[in-house]
Length: 343
Ligand code: AHG
Ligand code: MN
Ligand code: MN
Image 1: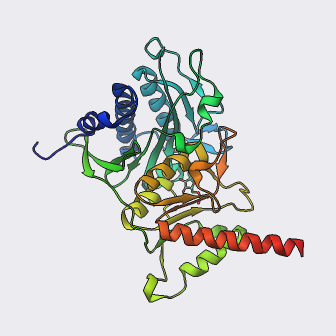
Image 2 (image 1 turned 60 degrees about the horizontal axis):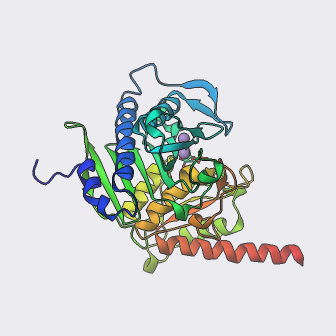
Image 3 (image 1 turned 45 degrees about the vertical axis):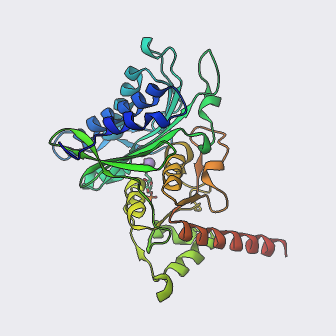
């Protein structure tokens, strides 16, 4: 066992850094790790069991739910209910937030926002999917926690992470002191530290976005694409295009290799497609902690004041230099568009 550090050991070692009561956040992260292992087991046998295909229900976003979406949602809520540290789970799969009312969670102080299964359209085709989570402290004191406790800015996150169920399964998380990645060793059933202190390169040569939506992109995104596809040896262009369709997998790859992931506003999704609370804030916290940048094209994602649970936003996230270039083009062409409209 020499040299192996499990997620559990690592969390305990690092909890001295937490500014709050030491054991609580550790237990919360442990609970999420346990649920992730259960979801991993089901994801890995997705082709075997009668688990493929639509569950026949529609979630609040109007999207068809896959059976594994429902399964993962149930597993995370159940782990967080029995863990005793969580007072509210807000999940992409439920219309309203889920208050946790169990005998062990009377003094629970944490809110968890979660996308239980990200990239669910990839399940049926054996392509990587993920889980994304975000943890806040409740603001209110006493009584039951409310929607206001959930609607906090991303800067208020005390921890965030994702699990990628890929060619191997990894859990990557931050508590605001860097980013660490753990790979599940199936032979011992433990997440083991494999990627300590992850850093995203300041520049990369991968861009990830759904180019099928090109005609609906804002002008700044079209200009960035043109920039990405133009030859320039000094900046390693043209870049290469990689798009999996699972945000977790696309961002995980870009985190390691350097790159930018963009899901802009489109005509069909004028506010963007991805959800601020379940997808963009946690990923923004992780990427910033790894030295990268996350923007909605104009402003820092983590500074957005949420007003609703299922709020959506455009997102430009990844290597700092790449995101800053995209942001510059967004600002330049939106102001030109505005000036054109006035003229
Ligand atoms: P989810 O499966 O949780 O609904 O999320 C899917 C998201 C994201 O993971 C992915 O990058 C994006 O939607 C793909 O959208 P398009 O198919 O529109 O490109
Ligand atoms: Mn998602
Ligand atoms: Mn999802």
